[in-house]
Image 1: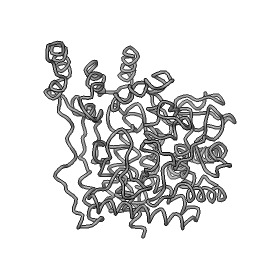
Image 2 (image 1 turned 120 degrees about the horizontal axis):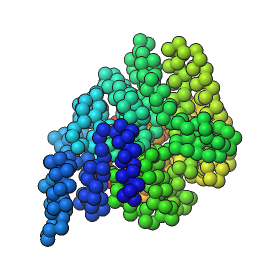
Image 3 (image 1 turned 45 degrees about the vertical axis):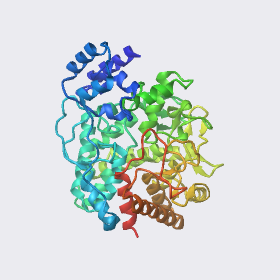
Image 4 (image 1 turned 135 degrees about the vertical axis):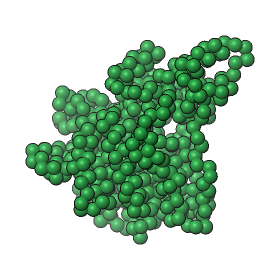
Length: 517
């Protein structure tokens, strides 16, 4: 594994990555720290800062580790500063009410611009201020931020919304894609592509005089190039990187990570899980990383039916949500081309969007279930798991009216619970499964149902979700990353880390829904 990893490091260096990852900085020491569990959370070490240059850290480690009584925990404490804890001076004032709490959180979660990289830090520089999700998520995250930005729009913080869009444009210019988050160890993958929706949101917030569509057109094109790279040479029935050519010749996309190594931020967990899988270690790591790129890490959505994480097969699935987002990107590019006076590109992009919509309807609609699902590349049929990703064709106008009615019936009968809509109906212990629910999926379900005049169900979901958020806030003084919608009296569980509060996307969706009343 070591030789393969070093080759990967060389490729990254040749690609112009200025900041090395923690595993590149501390070979040998990194693996020792992560596998021994020095920190309860594997993300702590990759976010830590050394007190002396890495070469000195490694020299000291080489000299001390063979001495009698060597204690790795003490060594790490002496040579590294752990990341700062979440803002501890802030305490919720429940009596002031939910709106006051939300308004305060924009300041609590705001971080200043960092134009240059801090030496030996995994944190990537950003030219403008930004908002983090909260808790252990101390950096800018991709798809989280769109839902946070909904709240910035509702709060009238248009300048900060523009700062966020500009930061994502910077990432596209600098790295050719928007990474999962602004850390060096996230650079091998992206996340659900919401940049086009961010540009739309900024244009709406700024009003008729906004030039967002033309201003950010170069970055929209880079986003599109990233997600469609390799399309022209791909043969039907084949996949390469993020692109898939379907049996009928249509092109769709899948989630992908350019690395086949354990995730640095979850190194111990990945190494342990790989030992339980029948897949080769590189194949397993690739599938795990692709699931992380989806944002759904982890869910039975990506597993063989009835099996666990060891069976993960993310790269064998064509995700319905991803392709709805790329459809929106194509539509946004068509609009930006028209506004820029590019009469050749605008119709070409509109045709691409129409073709993608037709392919989604052809391959991702499960007529038997009456619901949209992912497409199984291996079996060449709609995948078995029904998940809340199936609301994306409603939210983005892909579904036909009859399909939307059937999907609404499925949501009502199978997914609806006292606190909102389940992510999936499977109780697996994974955080993107029952009984958990997440703000972005609730929001898109509500948006999709309203788009197809399923207003009664949409209003029911919105009411239950807002009521659940408010109840938990009253009880705990917190707004959380995810919620238990089956038992609103219990907190959500599952996942590789404890339940986090803050929380950017919860705040943005909640304020948006509250303002719709």
